Image 1 (cartoon, one colour):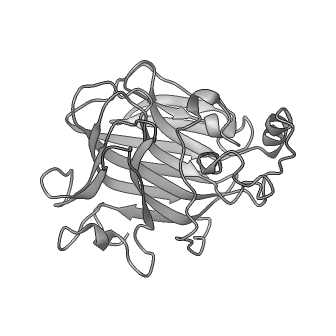
Image 2: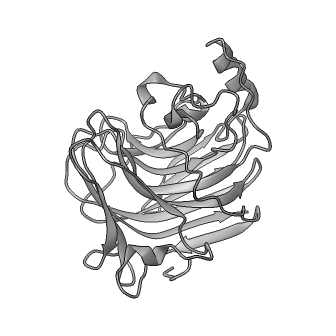
Image 3: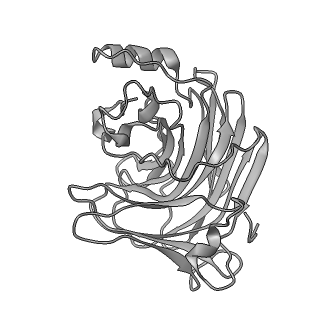
Length: 283
């Protein structure tokens, strides 16, 4: 699949694990049905080659460094799953600043009722705990109430769903804290290390319990559960009302960006990983 193209944060324990808004990389929304795929192939092994002026590949990089170190994102020529390149990520341990480094595709238009399939291959180096590491975020920044603004920090202004390591160490699960949902966990298959691992995340999008959430690791299903996976206006209104805030989720509500990499590294150590063969399909 190689191609050169291509709420107020609700739960306190996840307060700092989120993503920044990016107003400098706004693209025209894609149609509701589309496919985007990218294997991070380049001609000259340069990261800049992933960002085309026509917007056909990636949109931007999100990078937040800890105060005493610099994270790294680059093109790998030594470790890859297909072709001759992969995306290399090194996310230092967080300190007072939450460490994150990832690549982002924006301009999406994922609405309730959409069927979404996200695929990617990961190679995570080492054997240290991955507890709370975030790998993929699907987010809606435009749905935040502008009258509330950044009173709670930009960290909280992009509700969404994410793939996160949980269950005590390295069990990949579906985290829904930013839409005021519980984490859909699994502890059947620990995430393999020091080898390529295929991940497939399937969702039927809904702001109520009619949504579907499915996660497959190395062709083995580990999660298949109903539940909401989009922001719900009434839920947000009730949660914020408890804080004495009048909050209105903006409509139409849709996810407009996907991020992949170390979208947040709150683990106890540094994270080194590779990403290859990414795709997102919306039907």
